[in-house]
Amino acid sequence: MSAACSQEFWGLFVDSISGKSWNTLERFTFIILDSATMLIKKSVFYTSLILGLLVGQVARLHPPVLSQAVLEKTTAAPQLLQPAAQKNLVAVKGVSLTVSDMDQALAFYTKVLPFKKVSDTEVMGTEYERLQGVFGLRMRVVQLQLGRESIELIDYLTPGGRPIPVDSRSNDLWFQHIAIVVRDMDAAYKHLRQHKVQHASTGPQRFPDSIPAAAGIEAFYFRDPDGHNLEIIFFPPDKGDPRWQEPTKELFLGIDHTAIAISNTQVNRKFYENLLGLELLGHSENFGTEQEHLNNVFGARLLISGLKAPTGSGVEFLDYLAPTNGRPIPLDSKADDLWHWATILQVTNIEQAAEHLRQGGATFISPGVITLPPNKLGFRKGFLVKDPDGHVLRVVQL
Image 1: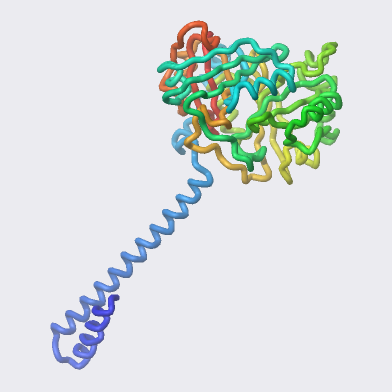
Image 2 (image 1 turned 60 degrees about the vertical axis):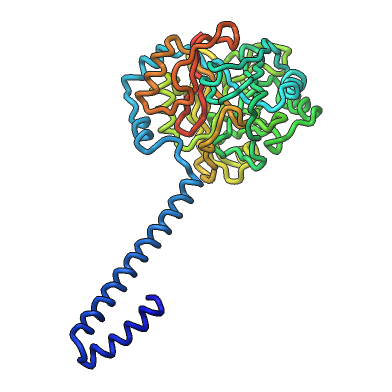
């Protein structure tokens, strides 16, 4: 009650109990009811405010990439789409990543690492803006090749996005890397040390025999000048693609897979298998000091799933069973932000691929299938779409 209302309340209370007036008693009763109503309204208001703040905080910490209805639709994606998607999928063509300075990036990828430059072009215009979801862009795009695999670097001359957070960890959901196969881990690590690369792992790690699916594999994480994670990996004779065992004098052989941190294996499997047509190769649950020091995450325990297209490199899920405090991809992410990666999938019929993804409730970055000017980026039609955690895929038709 206000001070004035309180004074009136006690005056009326004295009059009513002394029997001076029924009107006084009625007025006294009204004030009680009015005050009770006010208290209830305030209680409801403050309860709603507190709940709103709590919901807002949860949404800030764990913003959904897709609405719950869309997630349920994605999780229950029709199994009937899978055979058609598998038939339509041709290859995982590689990955695209955004860099801040193309000349600096090229010096790293072609001198520290032995990638070969295949093409170098600048593009701008409405078609590319619609494809990438970035207005007013001008991009320098460079194609690089290592062995049979290729990657794409994009430098946004305009407008230019945000850097990778300096406190990024391997269990943050924007984490992605490419795994470069090496013939000799010790020699490859020595080469990288000579060029003073930034460590992401404490050093090369060899997985123990207690993890049968990974036993004998050696791996090391490091970063490029912009902070993108890269991996070198060595496969013993009984692991990996047989071609990694072919005799060669080359130290760096090619790209085995791209790996992404995810929040839910089941949801992502249904997305990548039913809607895109990749096939699961196998699972491994990795833990222990080797995994902790590889990822540089204390207590790391991962469910790792490997998927493949008919040709090209694989896609690997890194589902952190522990710790579970990895941060989500920011909802306002754009293709010119430096944490942007795009896994490139080639299909036979791009309109069919887009329709499958729409039926599955996927979030599109491009407004639809975009037809590009010929002889610019190496494909005729394409679009960008997000997976359930917000990782970007570029689907293309040559």
